[in-house]
Length: 66
Image (cartoon, rainbow, N blue to C red; front, side, top):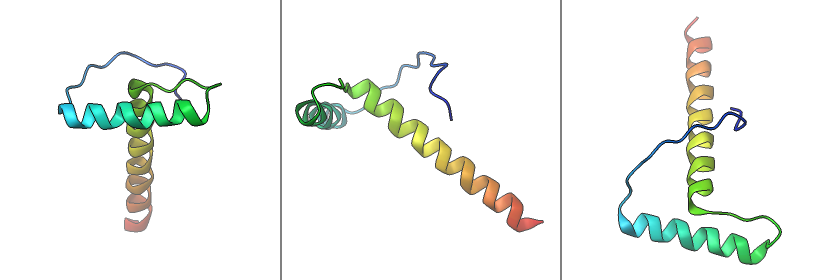
């Protein structure tokens, strides 16, 4: 799935989840300061990756049922 045409989407997460995402992003920023990672970008990548895997599973199920 392409990230080129991104559109805004507001989601609500429990505070502990948000804090964990911020910590992960901060750790990535420390390990690679040339590439800025935010919690929002991290969530976007997680969601896109998950949706891609669901699409692949759906496609596999469709091919297997024929």
